[in-house]
Length: 83
Image (cartoon, one colour):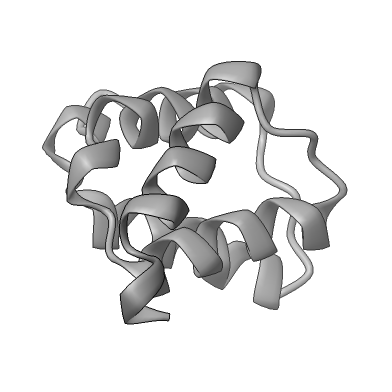
């Protein structure tokens, strides 16, 4: 988790997506770190990153933190032409 600050939007989305795809629900600390990093880098999320991250959290049954949900909704609107 100490290296989460080095994750870019694709790294965040891919990690959470891969865990969900494997049927793994990670420990709360990892999910918190990834959600915080996603909020911090939300402006760099492309449509695929947004979709992958939101899908993965839903697949795991994780309700996104309010700030993350807001950031991903805003990013989806901003990048809607790329979907």
